Length: 492
Image (cartoon, rainbow, N blue to C red):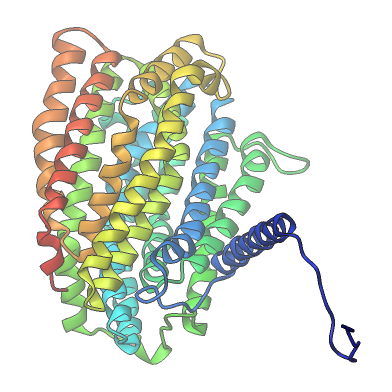
C-alpha cells in the first residue's frame, strides 16, 4: 500500500490527551475574549436589545456601567469628607446637617427618577422611542420646577436651617455658606439625577456612567484646591467643598444635555419637543408620587435620626456622617446592580415578558447578597481602620466603627431589599414601597431609635440598633411581598 501526497491535502496526527488540552485552551481563550469584549461594550455603550439577548449578558452590560457610575459618585463623597474632616468635627457635622436637607431634596429627585426610569424603560421596551424622547423632556421641565423652593430656602435661610437641626455655633457662623451653596444650586443636583435616570431607563447606562465620572472627577480635583488652598488659590474651607461640587456637577449636566439632544444609542430628545405636554407630564407626576413619597419617608426618617444624634453630641453626628459615607461607598456596586434590575423589569414588562423580568431580579439579588457578605466581613474586622482614614478623633472613630460593626451582622439582607424595591419601582409600582417605608421607618425605626437612645440612654448605640432592627425587618418583608407577583400587572 502506498500513500500518495496531493497538493492542498495534509495529514495531522493528534493524540487524544493533546486534543483535549488544546480544546480547553481554545475554550478558555474564547471565554476571556468574550468577557473582555462584553466589558468593552458595557463601558462604551451598546445598542443591544435587553429584552432579547441572554439574561446574564443583559445584566452584565447594564450593571457594569451602573456600578462604575455609582462607585465614582461614592468615591467623591469619601474624598470630600476626607478633606472636610481636616477642618474639624464641627465642619464634618455641618456637612452632615446640611445633608439632612439635601436628603429631602434627594428623596424628591430620586422619587422622580424612579418614575422616569420606569416610564422610559417601558416606552423603549414597547419600541416607542419618540414617546420616550418626549417623556424625557417633560421630566427635565418637572425637575426644574421642583428645584425652585429649595433654591430660595438655601439662599435666604441657611443659618436658620442649621440652627433648626441643632447645629453648633461654628456651624451657624461659619458653615452656613456651605449650606447656602449646596441648597442654592440644588437644581444642578436634581437635573443630574433625572437625566441619568433617563439614560438608565433607555438602556444607555454607559452615558450615565461617563457623566458622573466627568462631574465627580472635576470635584475630586477641585476639592483640595478650594478647601485647603493651592498656589494662588486661597483656602476657602468648607465653602470650597460646596463650590467644587457645584462646578463639577454643572459640567456634568452640560454634558448630559448635549448628549441627550445629540442622541444616545437608545434615546434622543429633540429641541422641537421642548414644550409642555400635560398628558405625559401628569403621567410622570402620578407615577412619581409613590416614588417621591417612598424616598421622603426614608429620608425624613434619617433627618429625625440625625436630630436624635445631635442631642447626643456633635461627635455622634460626625461619627455617623463618616460611617454613612463609608456605607455609601460600599453600597454603590449593590445599588448599581439594583438599578440594572429596574431597567430590565421595565423593559421586559414593556415587551410582554414578565417571567424574564422576574428571573432578572432573582439573579441580581443573588449577586448582591454575595457581594454584601464580603463587605460585611470587612466591616466586622476593619471598622476602626476604616474610620481612622478620615479622622484622628478617637471618640468619632469609635462611634462610626460601632455602627459599621452592627451593620455587618445582617448587611446581606440589604442586597435583597435593594433589588426587590427596584423591581417594584422598575415596574412602575412605586406606591407599594412607599407604604412599606411608612410603616417600618416612621412607625418603627424612629420611635424605636428614640426609645433606645434617649429613654434607655443607650445614646448613639440606641440609634444604630434601631436602624439595624427596622431595616432588617423591612428587607425581609419587601422580598416576601415581591414574591406575590402583583407588580407584574402594573401599567404606566
